[in-house]
Amino acid sequence: MNKVLPPEYYAKDIFTSLDLSVPVDVYRVSDKFGIEIVFENISDAEAYFICKNANKKIIIDKKLQYESRIKFTIAHEIGHFYLPWHNLDIFKCSTKDISSFKSYNILENEANAFASELLIPIDELMKDINNKNISMSLIKKLALKYGVSLTALAIKAIKNTDENVAVVFAQDGKIKWSFPSREFKREIITNNIRQWSYAYDFFAEGKTNEVKDTVYSMAWLADGSDCESVIEESLPMPNINSVITLLRISEDNVDKFEDEF
Image 1: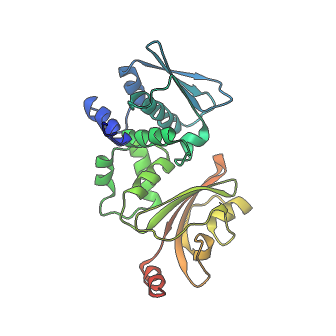
Image 2: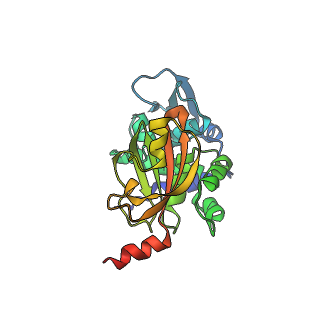
Image 3: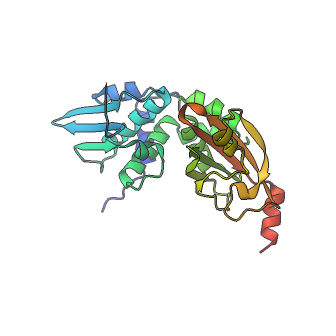
């Protein structure tokens, strides 16, 4: 049985073979493979990839507003085309499949991994984050460089740093997903945003200022308390009623927590 290579391998293959550079032009990539891109009103999905009778087409929902999101969605659909075992005639991709980064559908997760590597090549990213603290200002700067969303850049950076940091995305007052780094050993809460956080202030009071400050760890951690703090760095995104948050546990807290066991 042939070993299946990870989706990132195939994204790297395209990046190298087409001599791409960041920010990646996904329209050029689609054109190279003869994939037509069209925008239509779609009510039951964010995008489709259709491959029938040698005709290849990506259909994107017209309601998508942000170019960075459109780029990621196109890269996601290119993944369905390029990954050898993604051999369906039609892929129907929901907003949840593409935006959550934690779909229950394995093929959708693989297409997201492919898109992330195509748009944010790990070899390039490591040059940008090595010996630097992962901060919201760095994420914003690199998101512009790579032409991707804050969430896509934050997830890729968090997955590849040795810092004790995590990223959390909340919408409409509820946590949609979180990603911890390898060194972040604590369990992040789920469901509703808690009132001790600055993110809560956005949803409760409509505050829109970016904040970096310490808060009780019980605001974000399942085993947190009011005797321990974490550093919260939250950036509200009022246009989609969301907040993206970086959490960092100070070394003092790490030592204190480990001493208890």
